[in-house]
Length: 367
Image (cartoon, rainbow, N blue to C red):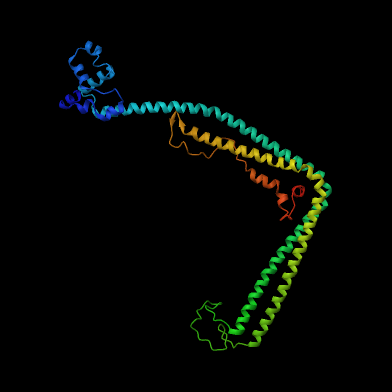
């Protein structure tokens, strides 16, 4: 009935706009009953009337009706006011959450810095211990230094023979193409050439008499062509011989290098084999510390990104954006390069013979 009367009086949209009701929440709805009580009853009756209590907050209802009757507000203003109150409550909740997160981040920053400093110290200690251990192992295997030098010399010789074999292969391919070209010219004659290799003029339309060179128009000499073909065939045979000889030299150098490598392994196996496990453990320990540092740095970057997105308790749109820096004085250690340098001598030996494992593998490590 109250809604019908408000509609008849033209006050339905002013006193009970649906959007305002939805924003203000349940129980906050100005009705005709409240309007009647405010307009026709005394103040004492209004304050103590049960018709007003339970329907809406008495003070809020009284204030809203007075503002409406005096033209101080209207339906759209009520909607905006309700939206503002809702946003204020949401912002307050977000500020409380941001305060909680900020407190957590402030405490975790110190923990991350401490853990990262500890990990960096352990990495330096592990690398120092590894270098000291390698020095002791080199001293223990000093008697094998002549064998190491011989292995290095044979390795250099092997590399020279390999380069010479590659050059011989290129020369062999070049001589084969030359012989093939001269053979085709002997049977089918020279092929037309255009443009001119000297002046780049177009020679495709120039008539060439039979038996003449298509380039210089000189008369072809079969004997000269046969002589050139014979010379090319002789050069091809010599190139094939050089290729075979250099391939044989590579095989002999490879065998000599493998024998020297095996002899070095045999000389150092008794010294290296009992400590192979310790060598590998000391090599992998700095790598484990580096992985832990990577994890800590990632946590620190995420912490800084999240902390940068919470300013004065207000959420920011770039909370998920990663920062490029990881704090003052911080450096990102490229440990992978360090590991490569630690084992560089072992990898410098080229392809290892099959079956070289255990102590033999670590013998090359100390070179």
